[in-house]
Length: 434
Ligand code: HSE
Image 1 (tube, helix red, strand yellow):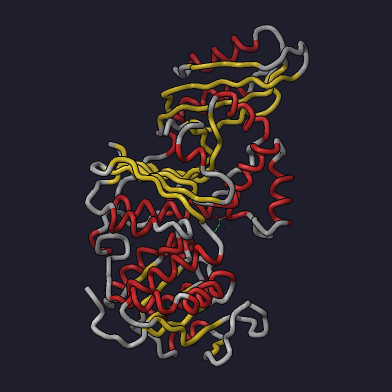
Image 2 (cartoon, protein in one colour; image 1 turned 120 degrees about the horizontal axis):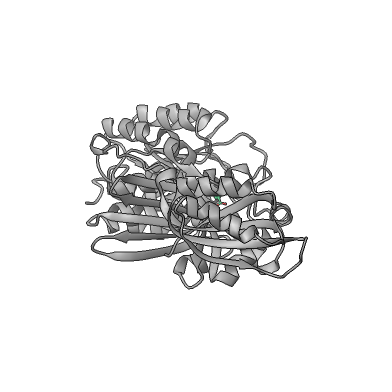
């Protein structure tokens, strides 16, 4: 369906940081291509940001400038408000709500906002017959929202998983390539501008979990349920575990995994060992990737840049072209009222394979005690390895266990941690056979 008008689509941009400035630039430099594809021009007619004097590398002379983004969403004569401020609440939420209440479509890159309020905002947009579009919110330039909502719409998605945070992937890749520890690589990433000054949302897994909660809603037709997400970050990953992973034929990635099971939905973000030959293992540096498995399509893999001005602006403008062209889709694939709440499988009930790394005093009988704790909880050991011999000294010992229920493993590990010769708490990393 084409838009019924050739009049320009007028947009207001709230937030002129890296992505906002990149969006203005893209709209200008690709104006004729965008007009051809949208059937009408897409023009910025209002902007809002705090600091007017900052050099953003774009000319904003002549554009109505609003100090207050919410006032812009309310007052500016526009068809679409593009929210690029960020944050789950506060001004970003107010801008989106005001824009929708005033009958303007909303395009946002704000995954935190959608993770917390996506369902309510989708309802609001739907009640008003408006679009709430957010291609840029997940995996930056990878068009994964459209892929799930449109390209794979004929499939039941059984599972999807992905590398959804470029900062973490960069840190893990650099740790593997250089053998350095987490803290040192993080500090370097911050100095290079690859990690935020406050990197907590990235390294603790929150950002990836925001994105996964949105993908799970689209994939399984359920309301976004960020509160039920299991989240672990990468702050405990050591260079030693990365070396052992390599020896065992794995790479460690921070993965978001959403899986449909007989008991409900698993949705979890945590460091994961994946076989070195799997597509996801070879997505390195700042790149993101998503793998979706549907019942008719099988496995499909999407890889690209998950952040940065160009890739994120590319996603924002794709949403604007859809709106300009009159292409509409329900926010999460089906009308908000048709989204079905599904049970979430608690992590204790997860069954899987695990890597456990211990630091133990090298003395007779320690292996027997460890094996006993596992046996008592019915945890089946797959491999055990100790590198080097140093009687009386501390050495690393690695175990892998398979097809184990997580709560049984955790009970066994609690007992193992209490063994006198085990000198620090076990490090546990889940293994997936993707
Ligand atoms: N901070 C995110 C990342 C990019 O490191 O991937 C924006 O979502």
